[in-house]
Image 1 (tube, helix red, strand yellow):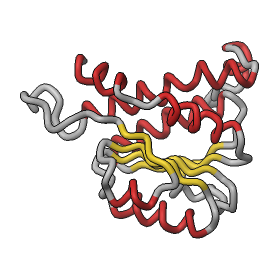
Image 2 (cartoon, one colour):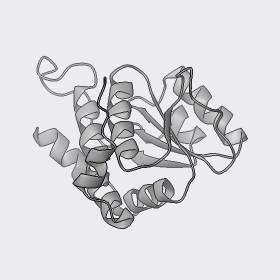
Image 3 (cartoon, helix red, strand yellow):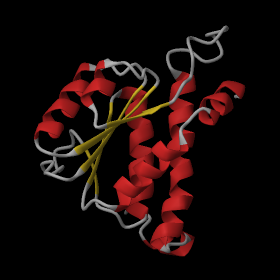
Image 4 (tube, one colour):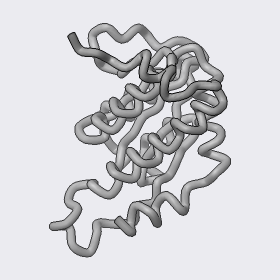
Length: 171
């Protein structure tokens, strides 16, 4: 996973802090991704819910409407997924802040976003049999998003016991 480590090393600290501040500075957080990027998004959303934040996944039937000053985080490797671009354009018109997390900093999604976190995973791995179809991006995005949680916990004065109390029981 050398490529994941290298990708995370290029990430901008100011962008990271801006995202954390945006998460803590909004009433509602909306997260969106398609396919495996969507699975990464849902894993992050669960952590934010466990922190006690109001988090929704765009596209679910019970998701409320995005409003002015809400935060929308969209994850897309290519930044060219049509539904991600459309979501960014729509919610920006509503006055929401859109953070794109993508491997392509000049993509349509990046241009539609308020800010971009560029996870530079490079081109296809030399041996795509080991990491096909965006695997390096997905792992990098998961590690990046999960690495925000301890910092958010600290700023919110939360601990694992607080989070465990909000952990889904699934009964």
